[in-house]
Image (cartoon, rainbow, N blue to C red; front, side, top):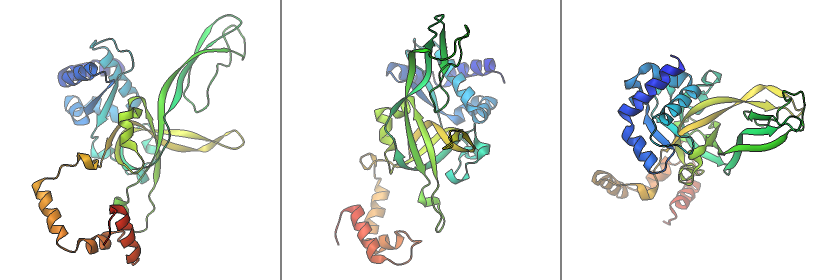
Length: 302
């Protein structure tokens, strides 16, 4: 399926299935829309498969399709966020391999580290002092790139005119201990967030300690050696497309009558002893330490 076919299919898809959501997003000043993967798969399975196999190109095509709908003149890029990928794309952090590079996957983990939001250059324009030629350099590496030579033959010392910047934030995601066996150590994975995913509202979802679900594209990053060269080994990162908190904040939790009944029954059946037995069950003994840790967590006394 070529790009022109994808573009036409995405336009039909958004007009038939997400027109109201698009109009609402534009009216509220949002620059993204959330799309269920199953909706796309029901509309056209080949298009949905293209999203999983070649996500970078397919996401850009979906973005272009929305811009061509002429809902309004977009002052900035409009993004499509896909949620609830099929089970085949739900991968554990420890199972991510080189075969996943360039694929669209879904992972779950706990945020362990979080950097501040920083601007990152995506492109830069340079002027040649000799002939006045303007050169646009796309920034794809970790190191800022400058043009090496102008068409007139000049090499180096070009004047920087402007650069396009986007907001970027990095996370370190760790496997949840709920899914580990025995003494297994949780694995970690690097995440990159861009654009609306680093807005003040989205930032609340990614505070350290939060358990989150992400969809995104796996990419490789070259490792620079101390000598200045590049290693034959590569790091893997995931450029996030969508983030959803798995655990709700206490203020957002609604307790049903059935859940209230279970809580009351638990409170009448030696709750503290049961909590101690269930705390770090893979570690034998240390009851007093477990007592203290539980009391610290709930801020109470016996």
